[in-house]
Image (cartoon, rainbow, N blue to C red; front, side, top):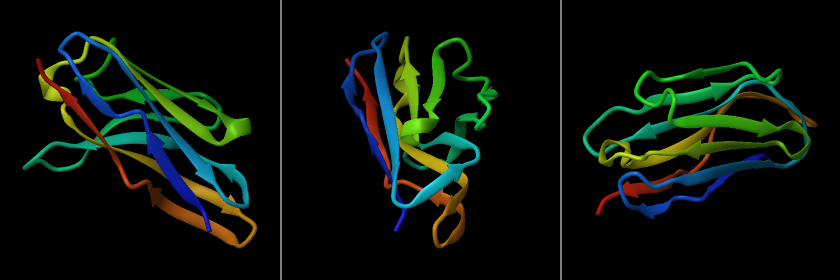
Length: 121
């Protein structure tokens, strides 16, 4: 069974930094793109950043220049370094893997359980 487990969320003051991690576990051969999404109260889930297996990245305009996504393919882990955090970054952050090749076949659109980030003074 493949799981995506996020960690690193918490409470931080405006202007502060946090680093989120998402580790994929299980009998994994490879993972295509991995990304971070977020959902604020009363809003739809939105893309924050995505990174392909080759390292190409894409960011939401609202986080460009402040957030950095990276991954360690050997550890099947993706990270999100968040700097200059704003109250509007407050949300539950979810990890996503769009295609995971496993011993048992291919999994599509796989999600973690989410980690909460609160930016407040």
